[in-house]
Image (cartoon, rainbow, N blue to C red; front, side, top):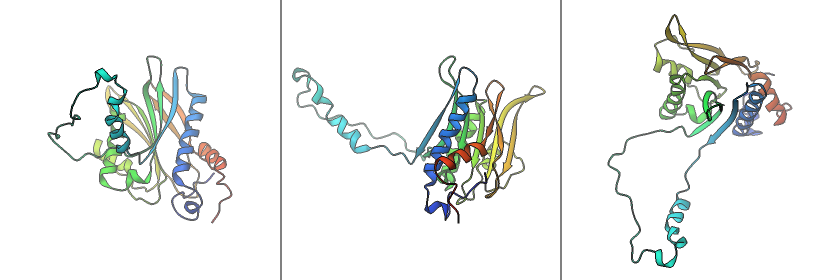
Length: 241
């Protein structure tokens, strides 16, 4: 099935892109769980603009003494307040994530690989892009297999190029839509990063990408098949311009 533009009309006015990304991550994880070897499992992890509910947190602190017995309640005690921080520095966490994490549970759930579906918020400003790139670089530093899929048409940044710029000065891909796969390996005893990259186009089918799990296990990730399944389940096949 050909890739559609989920971020611009007509499709964006009839379906929510975040619902599609959520479903796509779920179906990719489900497909992996049918094919992963014994001892491995995949889980989707989707976060869209999650915020801490400060009001609820404050309420729980103020009511904590209500659960103590009468003889254990502090008398005339002032509520504890934390001191002022000793330092404040700029920090941008990854506020949105659409990913599939693959774990090895032989000695407890240990991350073995990840598939990242890029969202608009990952590309909208330098701090967000740096947070996404830092997370992906941390995966690679741990020797994890990684796939990035970027079908976001309303932001022009290429996170794959920014990731490689952090690691090594190499020719840039310069594609707006793309998918890339990475494997940390040794060539002639030297550590290297093998990369598979392919530009994507609206109206063209999605490829099969290799997912290398730590331990040299490789699984084909059929992006086109899971994409078509997601479109069918979300009733997108009939939406036309």
